[in-house]
Image (cartoon, rainbow, N blue to C red; front, side):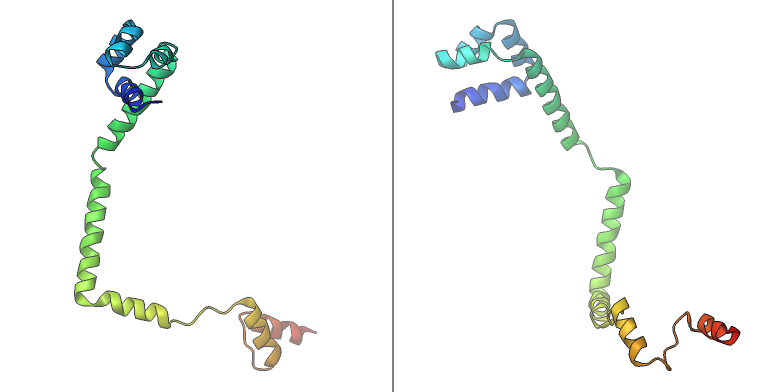
Length: 138
């Protein structure tokens, strides 16, 4: 497929007037675009319904990309930027990151089990009061 043929197809997808002219006279429009005989034959065999559907889909995609952002989302993004810059200016971001990095890691269940096994008399978990009441009842 030559670049000229690709350009011709792209023009058909994008330009509604060119597409209308092509659908009215496919061979004439393809010849006017300077396509070779094989490319003209391929253009004549093009799926016309598929051409219209693809053009509508591409048009919808272009309109979506040009749509302005939601004003609430734009406002929240701007507010987030202002807050981040103010935190950075005051040096709070570095303090927060230091606090996060120095925070102890949460205990995993395996760590809790090993503590309970090594210190059975000293372990006071959230279930210890229930365990003591069960022992008294026995």
